Image (cartoon, rainbow, N blue to C red; front, side, top):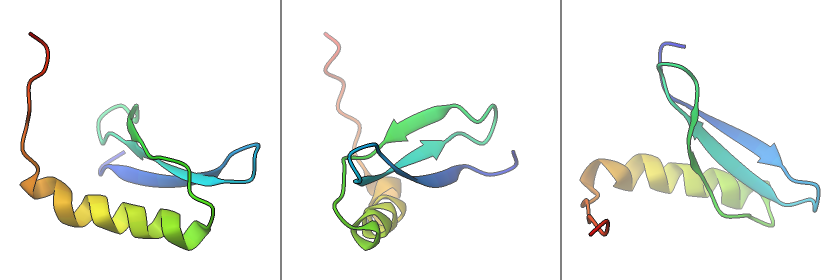
Amino acid sequence: MAFPRFEIKKSSNGKFYFNLRSKGNGEVIATSEMYNAKQSCKDGIESVKRDAPNADIEDLSS
């Protein structure tokens, strides 16, 4: 896999969600909330694509 990939899926309850897979080994590195409509899921993907490069990192591990 050369690039990270978003995958849209439909859960057993009929709602949509997406997984973001890494470019290296294809592992799921993020999973979205559940959306009632596929278009809302696509909008969520666009939001991550647009906003993630500017996201702050908050370390809550301590």
